[in-house]
Amino acid sequence: MFKFYESPKLKFSIVILLISWMTCSSCAWFQEKKEKTAKELVNEGINEFNNGNYEYSINAFEKLKDWYPFSKFAVLAEIKIADANFRLKKYEEAALAYKEFTNLHPTNEAVPYAIYQNGLCYFNQVDTVDRDQSSAKTALDIFNRLIKQFPENIYVNQAKAHKKKCLKS
Image (cartoon, rainbow, N blue to C red; front, top):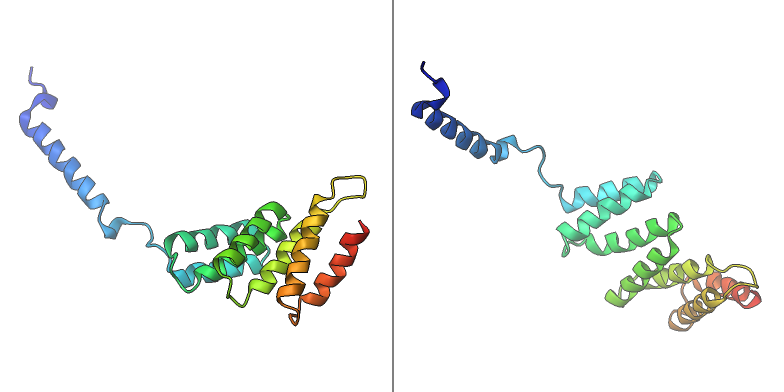
């Protein structure tokens, strides 16, 4: 009896078919979608942020930072990731991101904002008087830094008000 699957022609045909399929599957014609541009990612991140979808916003901004680290939008992505974490009440992550932003971009116009928000991260972690007050101390130090470095900034009055509350706690 003839065994069709043992035929050398059939084996050769199957190998050619597999090679063709693998070649075609790697072609751009078969790809699902091309990578988004930096502009598309920043727009997506901002839209998600404005709609309250902070996790999706962080995801879009993280992709932007990873895929386009030298893009003009990368700095914006850094601050928006911190803002999204702040809105999610992930204060430790937000504080770290704000601090990193001020260290990486000391001359950026958003530095006073980042310092203020960093202070708020610690301020929002201040508990009652009977608990560890290290968050209050850190917030106080950060607000003092803002007041000293940027005395004319719009965030100074708010920092002073929060500073008084820190001293009371």
